[in-house]
Image (cartoon, rainbow, N blue to C red; front, side):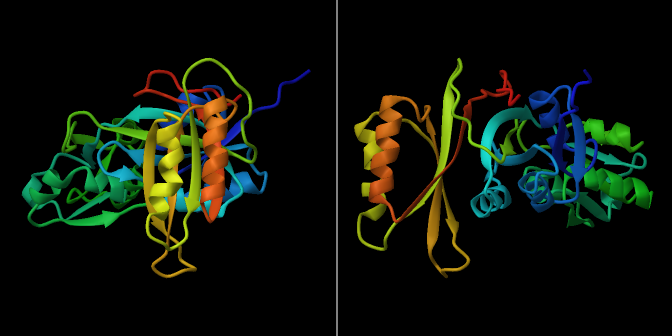
Length: 286
């Protein structure tokens, strides 16, 4: 009996960092590159593909707001994570003097992680691209030595570009956390450490956030992440996206989530998944 091929969607083109995360999470899958983060979410939500992979957090610039907002608006859950080391390269059609560069293309997060490089390019403008893989493809198509990109060495090879500088990030060690999303929530329990992601809103009254978070302290639960995001339909109102250490089937975690649900105006679990530790072995979703 023939096996069914697993397909996984990611944003960008071959050579994007998201493709490397897919290789970690789904080593044998057929990868489906899509132009935008939103199209990845849409492909999974519609059933076109069973899984999608998106970046959700940078070790240097923090949460990826677009992924947080798309998850909040979608019916999908996080089912796995992978932490990928990110090495930013300056790539172009050929070797060029920095003073001669007119444009530098990359994803906004990558541009933000290479501020010292941008400051050293007196005549260049930064141009945002959907992904670093797209940036490399654009530069290859333009074939203008004065137009370069910040991308991976993999993207440079795929697009036939020259690596002008092999490490242009502001910090020698940088990581991006990627998540796999699916139309179901994992309730299985396996070995390793787990994380549970959730989102909540509070009433506008003094101490509301303190009271919502108090069960975490009382039950001795580690809060790994807390991010505030605006709610577009309610001007100047915010929700809180959070990640705690533990599995919902743990007695203390279950009690904490139940109490937080009672103390908040809205509460939603985004999913549970095994924790990856700086590329130390991500959970497999299949």
